[in-house]
Image (cartoon, rainbow, N blue to C red; front, top):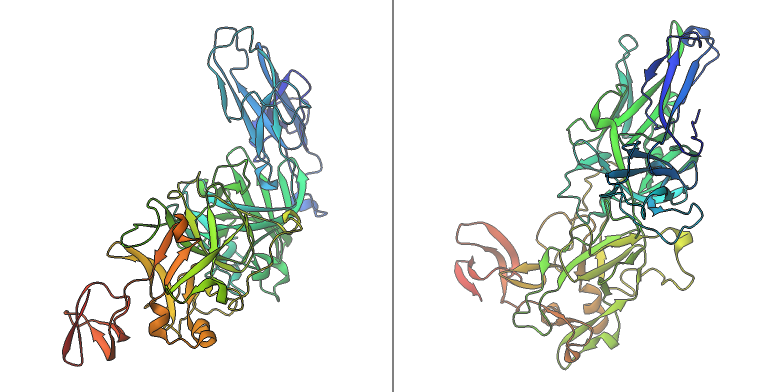
Amino acid sequence: MYAQANEQYIFSKWQQSNNGTNNWYDITVSNNNNIQITATSDSRWNPDYFYFRAVFEKQTGVVKVAVAKEGRGSVSINPVNNQVGGQVTLTATPDASNGVHFLGWNKDPNDTEHFIDTRNPYTIDIITSDNLGTYYAHFSKAQESIYCRIQNKATKRFLTLYGNKEAVKHFYDGKDYDDGFIFDRSLKLIEESSAKGNPMTVFLRSGTPAGAGITNGVNLVAYNIGYNDLLPEDAATNQYPLTMVTTNNGVQIFTSYTTHTDDGDMTHDTYLTDEGGDYAVMQADNTKNTIYWDVFLLEEENTQGSFGANAKAEFSGNGTYGENGKYYTTMFTDFPYRLGDGVKAYYLPLSPETYDEKNKKVHFTEIADIVPGNSAVVLECPSDYDGTNNRLFPLLPEDLPEDAPASLPYPDTNLLNGYISISNNGADPNKDVNNKSSMFILSKVDGDLGWYYYTNDYMTPNKAYLDLSPWDELYHQNERLARELRFVFGKDDDGATGIIAPKYAEKVDGPLFDLNGRRVADGDAYGLKKGIYVTGGKKIVVK
């Protein structure tokens, strides 16, 4: 049941009665002004009749509020009986579960382009004869598929999908109704500080908008693995898709399942919640404050929970061509995205035109506007990511322009490659790295930004690395020469920014140790920090 207010009124609350004639009492519903009742054919679990009534409040003030188009959200005003000379606050609650976001306020319900203000809530500090009247809240349309990020309202942790096959297990003891779902290394939660620019927090949410803040048949997909894919194939009783419901407190995400008892079948709802552990859980207790989530739509009009390039290494310019003040990071995603203002993306083609043999330098090629899916790139940013700049906007297939670039397969057209840390077979989520001899990552060592040896056992998720082995094979250059190349974005003689490879160090036989006896490299001092190292009983110096 959905309560819709007539003009000059706003919805206030729902009430319930045992007999429909008296003794009405207020009830709390999760979804603003919408009530859902699930009735079964078994009368043991349901009464014969339900008595509800919606209570509306007349707007008696000189400033009133309304929804421009019903079914996309709701509005409220405080105080309702405002007067000239006073202050009033207008609040819009969009249907976040269906990808609806607030657009703006104006006094024309049919004008979706010209807004008096786009803030939400919007406060009129002093009501005058010029600004009184009815303000309409405009919302975007509901969408079946959206790119979004999901953050727990209580803990502020972001949801990620690490997806191992059959990672979702239903538990039910048959006696105490202690039931729900357990996630084994699938729906992981990460701190807000770690979520900056992390593609693992980007979800493609699909479902059917049912109106009034409800999305049915929800599937949360990350890197081609969806929530529905994680349900055990042989457990029919808990193969239920998710439902999203927009509430006054946030979005609830839950699923329903059936249990069989001696008293008959019972249907339960179990809610996604953040219990403080590494992974999200689903539990039947919907009274906890951690069952509420914020669903942030990743569109340009919505800056909340935005996704961007989390650049960590500032370009120093020491001993290189180019300008200071730029930030660089690498990125590898399986979804295409559009670059926000000021962000540039580069890849390194395996082509003779990119190689200046005389000056031993290689030019990266800029990607215009849209980065294809499954493309490893270097991102150049004007500043560090703070949620409002360096933004990236994932694109649905229907949003891609006809002239959008094709993918950049590795290594045919791109010497950059990367890993996505999702596995279907239960293996370690980070990719095991075996061929490290020709792998280089973009990082800073002693203040110098460059391409350095990758020495860890596992590759960082969603980061790109430079692989010079195809270059060596094509141009018959040995690794020593390849590693001395200078890598430049654009044309350095025109003042564009560049990154120089660190100075080549002596190649040695056998492992290298630092002065504390720790093994730091094998056969090559390239990429090591400045200092003294020991190999074969001899000391070498990296300058």
